[in-house]
Image 1 (cartoon, helix red, strand yellow):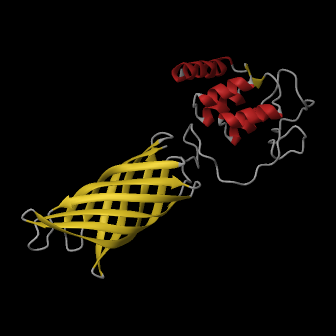
Image 2 (image 1 turned 90 degrees about the vertical axis):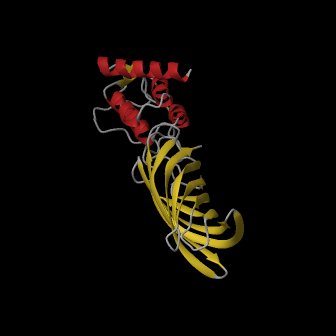
Image 3 (image 1 turned 135 degrees about the horizontal axis):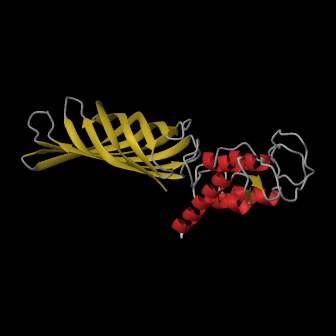
Length: 278
């Protein structure tokens, strides 16, 4: 069904671009938004077309519920009208004011200044998902020169477009450089705040502070001893969005301090993988 809607929206967009001043309806705009066409493409179609009738307050509400951006709504309000108009037409070419800036009784009240809500379509600046899941490969450089390889996973709940809460779990395995040891397994369980910087629609840098504990197993000839120690650290990385719900973590670097018997060890962890929005 989504494929059919997308084909119909593409055909409608092509027809508007071909015939120029074809009159659009609010339903046409909503169809293009739900087909997940880019905001820039929808705005271009509106700019070269006309509206069948002047949009009402109910039409603006419908556009918002469909996920139309503020720029799309402003373009619709500024488009010339071929059918009946709510207000008398003027000769001015200046775009009509947005509904949140006019005192007209038909316009909705001015919304509060809040962070952009998560969007389900497009790669618009500031768009984000409420929840994100990360998984990928991880390299652990231990204090003393140990080289361990493993995995890193994380679950993030974004409170708004800048602040989130992260739960970070990783496991690393290999042969340490310490004498008399022939194997080591290290699992960390960390949590803390994460800060994202969404100034660019595709490139999302982030930073976080992590606190928790580490479970280390050290083995000799197949016999393992284990200990649990406090762990903390900080770091960050860069995610590159390839769609509205999928990103590639190009790189993440963390400093992790693991304490054992009151003595801290200085370790570096590097990870990369895939981030999925939920």
